Length: 90
Image (cartoon, rainbow, N blue to C red; front, side):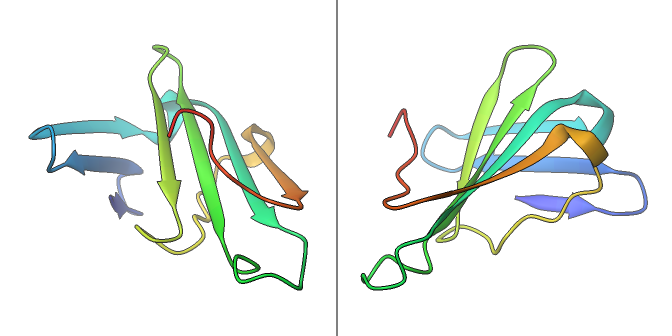
């Protein structure tokens, strides 16, 4: 994933499927950030971000792919703390 702060353009490459998707911050409908709140387990630092686009596409970016996403999307951003964060759809 590459984010260009000047243009607000985000590009996500899927090497496994050989696809590339580009969109802008305005194309984002919601951005949900989920992190672990256990504090005691090995996955304590695990987190992921779900990006939902206006056109219905969805992307999940885990901390294994990129650090915490801090995109300037205002009220479209919501954060959750859960005991065992695991993205749906994996």
